Every structure is written in structure tokens, then in C-alpha cells.
Length: 599
Ligand code: C2O
Image 1 (cartoon, protein in one colour):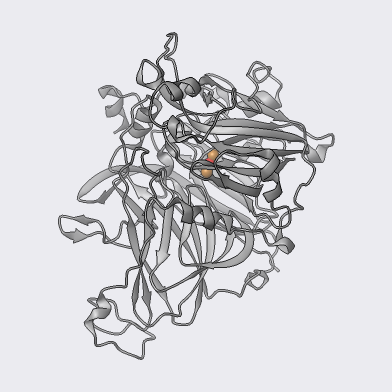
Image 2 (image 1 turned 135 degrees about the vertical axis):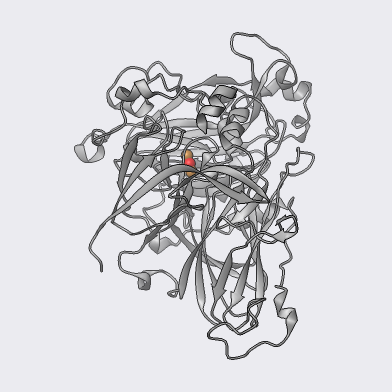
């Protein structure tokens, strides 16, 4: 058993040029790498990451899924938990990873920039790999699914925040590589290669860091045994396909038990069901290469291979049969198969509920500032995404971050509207008749913009039912709660019906998740214990939904003791003193002059 350590990293954030598909693109990355560095720690360690911002953007880094127990200050959400780290400024995040094991990740919490600012955060058991609730794997390998954008992501963010859509990634990636489904004037792009020794077991730590898509992942000729998700163990189950939404992580064992050869690893983005608008999406692939098979072009057996292979057909890897991109049911059942491991759960399943919320998720419209409008999104309104018809208005750079305002009792929070426990009206939420624009849809789409917050007394057990709607579209929504894991009690299609659906709750071995996928035209019921004091963001992990306002803030009050209260901010916490160097809120402004000053 190793003693708890302080694991230190320096993250140098800068803008570099990377070339794919014959085109150089400016990307903002950590330490020049995409994906960024892996933070590899042992449960109980302290992590100190010194962020040096040499990029022209305001930056914060969020440690996705880390509980941040009594440490909301390190959660890294701009203007919610901290002022952003301005260009030419530094900040050190300090947090410990206690009571959690498995795969998490980190990413910039700046609109769209997380597409290139992210990496894995792996928490190993304190008592070594021997204490996994599964046989010790031969090797552990992060598999990060992401996107490659040929556009300036700052512009994409600006467009999304200004009612202009139509920017899509140019490619999907596995561990930063596009793979051979993409080519640059005939030359295939590099793909990720996973080398396996026959008979050995590998633990893949799979992360969806993409902005837009849920993915189906398969490896030809192999099966996965899913053993954990969102840094919580699950009862192992075997599947040939993994469904993973943005923000989620899945740990899966793969045994190299296929005949010697080469196998494609394919990730296919899913599309919302028709007649929803379809978006440009691209599959990507990597290769599993057995050590007893030669790689094409090498002309010789790779070390460890006694059986040299003479046949050339080994050169063409075996491809898996992928699910249809519209097959939402596979994902529904995959997620339904996740159950907790009772003897390894973080805490008991909360049984007494103190607060109940029903939160609808969907699109809608608001009027332009200072204008009135009556005709919804096809008239003068602006298309937004909302929760209970409130579209989150992020606090501007000119205000005090919410956590600071909360901690110092500035009164700013008291002036904010309360996020409602219920949608403004009940209707048939999943009625497909709401998808096309028209009178029916217009009746229910109206939203308002607000920085709405919901306060919880310390220790309250909160049950939330996330209900998707069919307003204008029927996307699923990966909902992420900061600072707490949620137990996932049940999911279903159609409208949640309390009297009937409570009977389907799994109170015995529900999975614990920080990101729950609310199925298309369906709902998910979760519970969490509001016992981590602070100001916590709750939002959809689809970037365009988040930017359009599918977010809110949960405030957990202090308990009655010092041990249950939020300590003061850490030293060198970004303060208003830096205001002189303030980058304007809308740092994505499109003017030529501003563009030029970024170069
Ligand atoms: Cu991974 Cu608030 O995000």
C-alpha cells in the first residue's frame, strides 16, 4: 500500500498548429498534445495542476467527475466557481481524489475549446490492481473518442451563442487520431494502434470527449466486459458494443482471444431519430494488432510472434458490423444494463426522499433582448435550449462568480430567480406532433433566459426526474451534475408517470453516475444526497445544448459543523484585481481587428 502522494503537473495552455486532412488548423491544447496529458493517480492522492495560460483565451479546467469534497473552489467552471484564468495568467488547482476509483477526465470548461483541451484522469486503487473487483488486467489503456474541427472553435462557440448553427466537426478521432476512414489527397490519416498479446486481458478506459455525439464502439471479433462507468464499479456484463455519450466514461475488459490478426476498432456517432434534423457526422477507426501478426509494410513478424504470417490477407483488418446510427434502442438497453456493485458502492442508496423535481429538457425560444415576439423560433425569437423552460444565462465577466457571491454573502444570489421544481405546464412531453414547428409546438416552447439557481439544505436527498421533450427535436441528453454522483433508479420511454414508474426503481443495486443519458423521447430518475456544500453546475454535455442554455445551478448549503462547511477560497484564487487585463466577455467577437490580435 503506497502512501498518499502529491501528484504535480504543469499544464501549459497554448495555441499550436496541427495538420489533418491537408489543412493546418490552430488549436488550443495543453503541453502541445492532443489529447492532453494523462493524470494518473492513486486513490487518496492530492493533485496539484499548475495551469499557465499562454493562449489568447480565458481558460478554466474542470476535473470531470471528481467529487471535490469541500473543495468546490477547484471545480473550474467560469463565473460559476471561479473567475477564468486570463491570458498570461496562472492558477494552481489543488484537489484530492478520495473515495473514488476508476476513469474520469479533465477538460476546459470554455465553450467548444474542450474539443482540444482534454485528457484522461485515472484513479487507481490504493491497494493496487489486485483489489479490482475483476481479474488484474495485463495492461490498461485510455481510449478517448473525440472530434477534429477544421474551424476556429472560438468562432464556432460564438456562432452557437448567437443563434447560428451549422458548424460541425470534420472528423471523429480515437486518441487524437483520425484513422484510415479519412484521407488527405489519397493518403490515409494515421490511426491509433492498440497492440495486444494473444490470451492477455486489457482494461480499456473509454472516454467520450466529443462535443456533439454519442458513439457506438465495437472491436471486430472481440467482446467487452463492462466493469465500471464514471469511476464507479458496475456488475460486469458482456456486450459486443459500447454506447457512450459525451461526458461518460466506460471501463471495459477485452480479452485478446481471437485468431492472430488485425481488427478494426470502430466508433460510429449516432443520429437522433427521424424526422429530427440530421447532422454531419463521421465514423472513425483504430486498429487492434496482435503481437503475433506482422503489420503491413513491416515485412516481418513483430517481436513475440513465432508464427510468421505468409498470407497477405492479414493486411486487411477485420471490420465489425456496426449498429445503425439511428438505433437508439441499443443505447437504451446498454445503459439499462449498468447496475452497481453492491459491495463496492460509494455509499448506501438513499431511500428517504426530501425534495422532488421534474425537469424537462428541450428546445424553445426567447425573444430578443428588449423586443417582444409572438411567433416562436420561426418568427423573431431566438432558438434556445432549456430546463423547465428556463434557458441558463451565464453570469457575465463583470459580475462576481456565483461561488464567491455565495460564500461571502454578497446578496447577488438572493436576487436570482429560483429554479423551479416543475415545468411551467404539463403536456404530453414526448408527443411527436411537437417536433415540426407549428401551433402545437408554439404553445409549449416559450422559454425565458435567467441565471436561475436551486438551493438545497445540507444533506437533503433529492430525486430528479429528467424528462426529455419532443419540442422541435428528440435528442437524448447526457446530463452531468458537478460535485456529486447520482444513483440512476430507472429510465423509460414516453412520459414519466410517478404512480406507475416508481415500481420500476432499482433501489438494490443502481449504478452511480456523474453523467446520465436521458433517452430520446424518454426519462431518467436519479437521486443524490446534497451533502457537498458549494455551487454546482448541472448541464447537458452536448456542447451546443449547453451553450444554448440547457443548464442550471444547484447550491448546497453548509452543514452545521466545520467538517460539513465549505472552507475559504484557496490562496491565489483568481480575483477581480486582474480586471485591468480583462478580456471582454464576448471574446469571440468577429471583427477583423480582434481576429488579427489573436495571431
Ligand atoms: Cu464535463 Cu460541466 O462538465
